[in-house]
Image 1 (cartoon, rainbow, N blue to C red):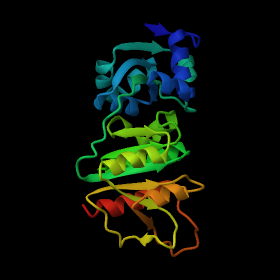
Image 2: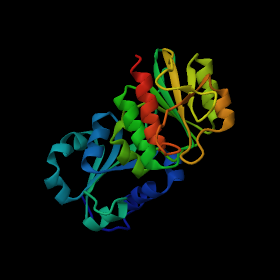
Image 3: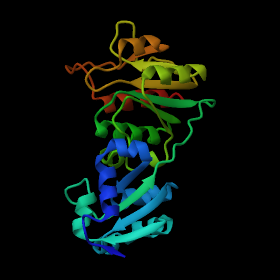
Image 4: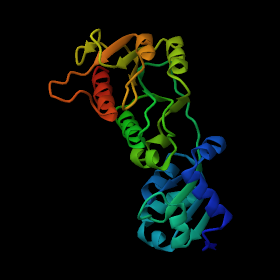
Length: 259
């Protein structure tokens, strides 16, 4: 079936999911865009409800489409105009997958490293941290008051790891910290403080959670005070602080290399 109109109900629904985080939250649905990202969704076992693709995309990306089309419950060919309606990019590839998000449980009972992101608002930072987490075998990520992790920009910058990495959303740091402490997970706040321990001379416990704060303000004083330790990354240069994603990568690497 070929959908040509931008006003087709299914096209309008997909476009709404791309732009409306409230709708994504209420329905649990999201749209992945791009041949590789959509393929990663299918390979990782995401529930692919619909695939939309242009005829040009079918010819250009055959290596990515086989498993995707097999996993999809429905497939529709769309016009370039309809693809532009759905797309969040300037030059759409013409491949889209409407998926249902399946939350993966975070197992806090076993040894491993966890990460808590507090009020990060830059989708690129969130996606970059998630990629680092998967690369360093982080066991789960807690997102507290952060930007929507199912937004198109987060999905693209995370390069598909969201389909495999256990993620749990909390409204506040306090809720997540309560869960971590109840499970006996040690917490390490990344913050500038006279009382902070300095990397790399920090001993991370077998079950540890690294906390990274907002891009502009960092972690709140209350959150830092609630953690078991405060950790500071030494910066001999002139910069006063690090980008949140960079700070997270350094902290995660330092903790991971002790495993």
